Image 1: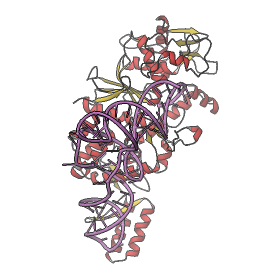
Image 2: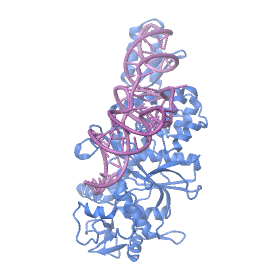
Image 3: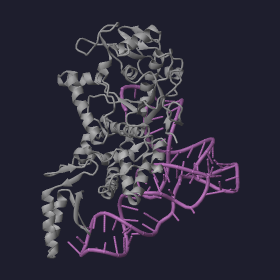
Image 4: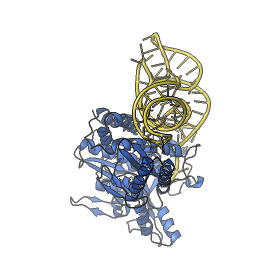
Length: 462
RNA sequence: GGCCCGAUGGCGGAGUGGUGACGUAACGGACUGCAAAUCCGUGCACCCGGGUUCGAUUCCCGGUCGGGCCUCCA
């Protein structure tokens, strides 16, 4: 058995064969930190988090290097900083912290590496004497004839790679014919894109052979990948919308800089999340759902995680309240069945096999449902592999004292609830059901659901 | 206009050339003071038209509808 993944480049499921099983490399395009993450942004974070967990499960916990960048130099950041009258770093620090907190609430583990674009603009020399960084990379591309300077800009010449458009399957001549953007007069080819652009005095900038300026978007990822992971990585991931132009451009730059070496062995792209009614989520439609909004509305991080994993990562996903409710019901059922059992190593072959088959999380989840009845301990192992049952999920401080013990089980204690239950049990013993029901309703009002079982009354959060 | 996806039961969502996953919702039953939870049971889906086949929801062609990208975007 090998892991099979759908490679966008080949448009087919392929056997995943890392160059070095002891160092599996994956890079996913991370956020541009100028605003809160919405639920659509969370999908790739969660999907590739599951993939990273699966790779670690398969190749070993220390054999996977997963990098997810932070884009902290960008015109939208500059605009946001100007609007607030603060330094851009204030903006980027703030929203990076928000991003990490929001994703953490969804059970997303921090990646192995989180390179910041601004750290890779200037030349870097690593321990092996290798020179990396965006400016040296751009200079190299110019020297090789794949890029040219014009009016303070440096542009990549899309004719240079010879096969530009291969990933997105857009022939270059059609792109030229269909160009809708206004073409800057200094471009040799309408599809040429910016590697470097000049900064005004009040904009962030770096000194370069082409004057003071800042990098274009696409070069960031290429430079960070080269610096941290190497010329060819095993997996490059991101949202479907990044195929063109972002990944197409990354690919072209890196290949030209590295003597034609492919940037990635496998390209993975997650499908889009929509808000139903045919509307994509966008600020102009006013239908953006922030991860923080969902959490504030009382949806727990693992319910949101389950909702995101309920469809295959390449399929479109329509986000809705009904999906959240269904996810919550399903997760409650699982938790009740699994909370008290001891975690066991997962040995269900179907479970691993379906994840190995292009990360089929909906099917994996259906196996969890079956396991919950037949083998709760195995179900627990499966849920853990999928990233559920993390300490971050047990931030349940709803009322008073809540203690969390045993990371895997999250035993919740609350003296006040226990006292209320004791009072209700006494009322039931004297058949005072009016009082009994009053106590139950009161607790329900606080989100605490009582269940009378053979061994007494237990409670859980509704 | 170009390129690319998808169409499965009330809803979500896998999968398969031949005895219709899984979940959620609904309903019936057991249990229960009543609930909740749990267990048992019920409902019998694969867009349309051709084709290939002994047999197609599954493969091929056409159509219809829906979605995405081509511009910052996960």
